[in-house]
Length: 545
View 1 (cartoon, rainbow, N blue to C red):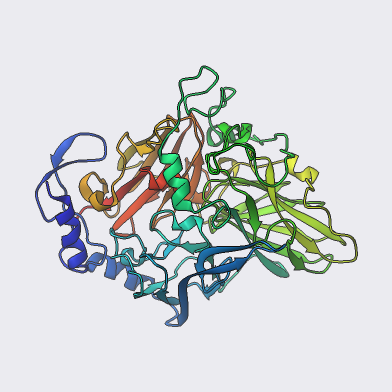
View 2 (tube, rainbow, N blue to C red):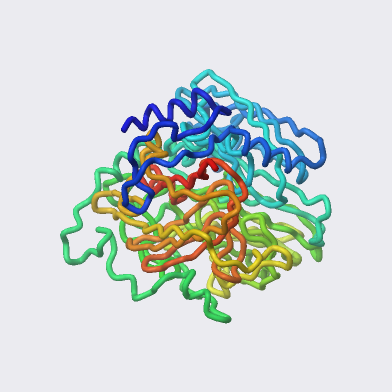
């Protein structure tokens, strides 16, 4: 089998007949061998026809993104060398109206190739930004123009899909406004959360190399992942959240910035980080800083508002390895959207947000100065921003508001808004996707098969247009995994919210249903940047009819 040639055929003729032109034998993603299916091309006629149906306003929104290496100021005298879009952290917000066409010119001034992935959007496949599956990587010194209709309103974001570039500064918010917005609020604040090591303890590539060396898990004091002990019998946040009225409450880590294990010799490996909310092990990577809107807690970003006004928070977790528990001191939130899609409004004291997830929430502002704290779950540190509506002294960087220990509705406990829930239908095809691997060998994978981006179409999970598809994520590992599907939004269970990224806890099985209505070839992967890059990815591909 020459799968490299298959992929080369695809890229050489994007818009031609399609991938899978050879008849070599390959697996079906479940381990059985059969002739390789003929897959729809990422830029073929089916993709173009679907894109044409999205066109609404006829307006074009033009932006230019320059990926560049340089110094970025995190505040409090902490300047770091990193990669970013136009020297800003986060990158400049892109905002357009649903139905508009985004025309984004990427100029690559980095020393290596890159791309832009538009996270959460159902867009045309050849604009998804995943080299070499949907495009050639944009070479150093090169450029590429992304052009697609942004059809669905919501809170999204953009980042590269090359190596672990995501864990540098190459990201920014993408807001698609609803021209008929039903939500009533006075002001809006986009809040981007991140864990940061680049230019401080090393680079994400060095961190990945250190992790991929694996670790000794022979000691009886360690669990199956080689880092922590037993997980207390929790069988998955999403599964527990399906019980009526189930809320998650847990104690708050009170450590200082830097995370657990900061005194150990290894600058990248995080030891001893645990969280009941995450089913045990809280993360792999030791980060020296946790940021909100690109700022360290000693120099926090500040939102200036007025008391009594209703503020819409659009919260994005752009982190590489960290789930954040976020709360606004002295306030209660009303959760309104998950991953861009409307919810039946749900009260919350705090939210737990995994990498790649987004939540929108409304809050009526009090009078004073209030801490917005993003606790790095289980890691003993936090990011900080401020909401200032009146006089008062800013709280210290170590502040931990009581709301962090309050009501935290989990994703599967949320309900979709009217008109968002999928029509009841039995799945036409079910793909059972076992999450496998561990820290000992750092061999993260799907169904025991580590993904090779250059061999992407060798073992696809195949679907046909018009099918109702069920993905069953079965987590057999000792770690939690934020599982993301490109190009689609699925529904959690029979009545859960619409999402594109879902946290699957150790021992949990999460069923996600979607309609196969966006043809092409799409990644499924763990949005922990280090798990995904180490092999926990797969390809969901439409068969050619």
